[in-house]
Structures are given as structure tokens and as C-alpha cells.
Image: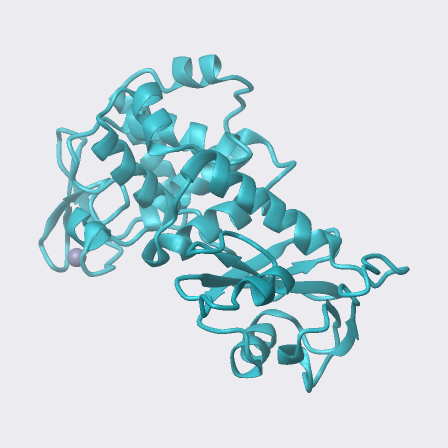
Length: 306
Ligand SMILES: [Zn+2]
């Protein structure tokens, strides 16, 4: 593939994307990888201005640039800075805080925070179903009891009502990809549809003994007994999804410290994205994020801070 470049270090990366023209050409290649289109109306016939930077749609006559409607937006920030941010965000295992990003990229922390959130929206989870042997579990984030498993939350809830926590529900194909989403509560009415939307019917599902999984139809379910401290008994374990929680929590505690409920799904997406692309080359991941970024919906600063 032409647009997959081969860089092994940040130094090589920065040397390649040395100026705005090179970055823009790369964006053009990624954005129009399935053909040219107008970001205003989707029409496929567009004209390019002589300056090489602006386009006009043959149908709606609107002008645009390669950044219009993408997560890069119309900001004055050079694409090179965006690219370095993408490199840093997609090569760390735990993520990167806006404070670190600001230092590395050379922008204010406010700008870094904005970039961070926009880029995260380009790191979405795949919509495709997972199948085979699937481990499912929930974790509890924020509030008075931070990031803990339900068995501990239930105990600590006494007296506090467990308020202020968000629930993240995760499903991981054994030895494969993870899908995770924020859910409102951990009852069957939430868990069953989440599983049905994500896991192919007929798959084997390992859960713990939580009642919310009872009565799940269409799957072969095995409950792992956590309360007896029998964590691993043959194949009946949920170690795969638990290692995802461990990764997520390292990012939570070590990098971000706090994730608002409003943006939690995006952090979950970012973490899942990273795990699912572990082992892929940096150049492939970079191309994928730039592809997602140029496709992305415009996400205004006001919408982010509202
Ligand atoms: Zn148009």
C-alpha cells in the first residue's frame, strides 16, 4: 500500500513529515483513499484551486480544504503538530496526558487537551462482531470507589449507595479483540442486549456469577466462581478481559487521573483501540488514525467543554 510508510523511530517520522506540504499530501491520500468527495454534501466531483490547498464542489459550489469537517478542523495548528500528537498517542501503551502532549508538541495545555479529545474520536472501536470464546465482565470507574471490581464495590457500597460510579462493560475474544462500552447499570436489561449486539450467536461466554448474566439466550455460558477464589479452573476464567481492565486502569491512574462521565466512552475506545492494534506496525496504526481523523465529524471546542 502506497500510503503505508515505514518509520521505526520518532526521529525518522519527524524527518519525513518535515513540512506542511508533506503532511497535507498524506492527508489527501488518506481522506480520498476511496475517491474524492465534498465534505459538505458528499458529491464526488470536486475542483482543486491552483494554490493546491483549496477545493470547490461541483455540485454545492462550497469551498473546502483537506481539513474541513475532519478532526483537524479549521484550526491554525500545523498538521505536523497533529501528526506528532497522533504518533505519541498511538505508540504509547497507556496513553498520554494533555500535560505531556503540550510539552512534546509545543502547544498550550488547553490546546493539547482539545487535540487529545479530537484525536481520541478517531480511535473508535470496530463495529464488527466478535465470536468464539468470549470473556465478559464489568468494571466500575470513578466516584467514591475508584475502578474496582463489582465484588468489592458491593461491599464498599454499604452506606454510600455506590453513587457517582460509571460502569464499563467489556467483552473480549480469547486471544483476540476487545469491545467495551459504558452502560447505565449492570442488570440483564443492559447486559444482554450489549452482548447480543457484539458477540456472534452460538459463541461460548465466560462470565462471573453476577445475576445480570442469568437467562442469556443464544450462547453457551459458563460462570466462573470468583467468590470462592477459584479464579482459574481449566478454561473457565476471565483473565483476558481482566488484563484489559488492568491496562485501562493503568491509563486511568497513571496518565489521566480523572475521566469525566461525559468523555469516558472515548477513553474506553482509545484503550480498546490500542489493545486491538497491539503488534501492528506503528506506520499501519498511524495511517489508520489519520484515516479516521480525516473522516471524523467536526467536534467543536464548545461541544467538548459543555
Ligand atoms: Zn458539495
